[in-house]
Length: 253
Image 1 (tube, rainbow, N blue to C red):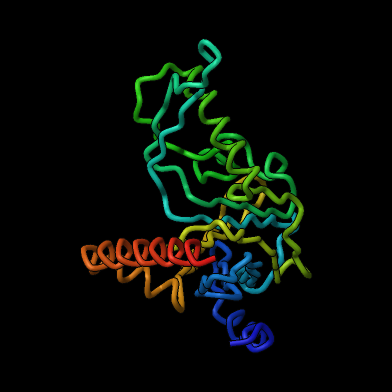
Image 2 (cartoon, rainbow, N blue to C red):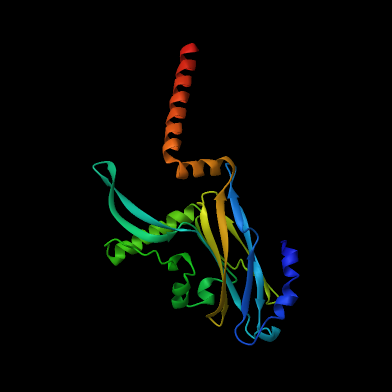
């Protein structure tokens, strides 16, 4: 359904508003993103409406935060040290549930919308992510490794914050764009929308997004997962055949 068609449903949705807290009606431009060999990234449009009780807008304008999060991963961060002129692995730390991708857009800077406690509860901001460390490092080391992980993923575009990028129209409609870099992994993603009034999260909603491989990439991924022996044997035969062919050409020319 197109964005215009979805927005035409707004009058009917507003009639459903009942007394109590406001309701979020979110959606996303793509529920499924297909990755092919030529995939260079994508922009997701996250949009929706705020349904207020009886259709009355609050005196204080509400704020919107949108979080796009990828599948969690277990990660070991290692620190390198130079010993006798050689770089070797030194200290390390393991995080059990680091998101493979995290991006947040907000109508204003997060620190101006919610306090630190609320941001930590809802994981609003890269510095508020609950990475679940499982190693026995002390707190200072864990903070250093966590900062290193965040910095690494920010530089590769896998972690991002976009304050002030959520547009709210007439206090009811909102929209935001979040980038998906080419390095995202396949899996199930979530787009979480939070409505904040006076520093308090009063409504939240989630939409699921699937990122899948398609075409030849999907065939290879399925083959490696379902027929690992045949996949490995085929890879060895192909590598051997290409090596033999390259050698034969070199001898001829």
